[in-house]
Image 1 (cartoon, helix red, strand yellow):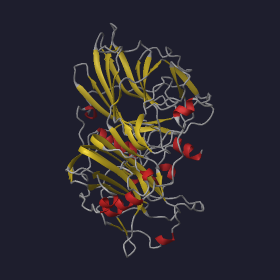
Image 2 (cartoon, rainbow, N blue to C red):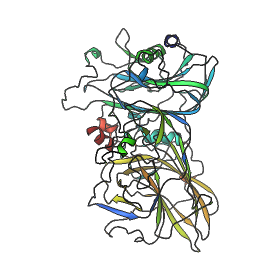
Image 3 (cartoon, rainbow, N blue to C red):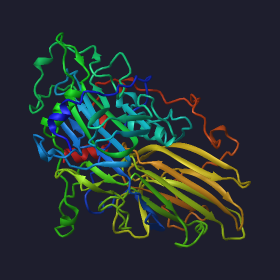
Length: 581
């Protein structure tokens, strides 16, 4: 096959021209939720209706999923599917070959060791062809952003996003780009990898300072990164905990999502390395040889995340103990979930609920958080490290496509509302969902949703909506639609689950009518407003143009744009609690 020494001779690589500045990456965090229902909260209310598993299932496309450790402060191997033979540390390699379609997902955060740390952490991604014949690697969509390119703006619950200019966090921006069929030109559409050669797919900086050029994910090896301090040798090593002096540590993150296809078996790896220095002390981008040397001789990068709980062992143990999900590093099975919600398996339509009633379908459910459906949607792991997640909790980067062939079986016109919601966790409530009247300021979802539907005249309409939801938020409707008597209209909801989110959510279909039909809370609680669909609006055109948005973004807090942010800017609130515990 090949030897470790052979890899070090594989210097040839394709370097792609950098592209103009682009949006941001995918920030992944695993939900920190215990395996029991939350205690009752005085501010909560319950809506009673059917809560159902989502029809369909994940496809079989493997996903290279590099997310552990999320916070990287030590050089090393993040994820390697290479064989461990002749490697210095065989346990750092999973021996899994990709062939055909596969996704390549990574999200990692760099954080300074001291407040004045301004170094640059690089993430490298390599693809190796072990075959005696050339292999063609097709690069479909590819998107990568730094968190400083996509700050967590304070956005309203809903905002139209026809051109991807509305985002809050790198995850929401990245998946919006992919959902809207964009790709960054920094990656070629196709590359031929010679026999027993390596392709440098990613050479991505995560700087702790502003760079004077676009920090693309494919910087040419040897590129100089100006602005590094000269006293870099005085920095402590990552294993030393710095003294707190009240100043925040600089942080930055990078995520990327690529859709790849190979016509032969290939191995892949992601690695982390602080930028090497020139003789003059300037930082530069690593070379392929340096990445391969780290791959052959390196250990797993650190610091390591909290090890996960084994779901099977936990099910047999005392359920009062804490369940830790862990973060993902390995190969997950499933890149897309297609669902068709109908009355019965052989039916062609979904009868809308009676007036005032509703039905919900769960999305991105995880162990011990399925809203009583017992459906765990987390992708299974085909290969993983022993201290990383047993499943791909959250399904970050997974494309959900839910078809709803709605049927009004009555002889009267009906109006329906379709909403994405983030209920409180409760495994004991089988026919209802718990919400908060005044949701706490812990954002659990931020991302773009695509809604396609038919008008009464049969015209197809498309809208892209950026959604922000807090824990326990009932949510505002994405769509309100009128259905004529005995008529059928098709609605399709799509989203790529954003890494800035904390699962799970539900998609709720409600037929508007009697507000008390689902035992709504007292009249002091205002119901979520429902806005009509303006079928003539430009934002609802069948193919939204990818032009500059005329919708203004909210006032930007400049403090959120600089690199020297608090680490909490990069991690959802639930993740903070997870790390604190």
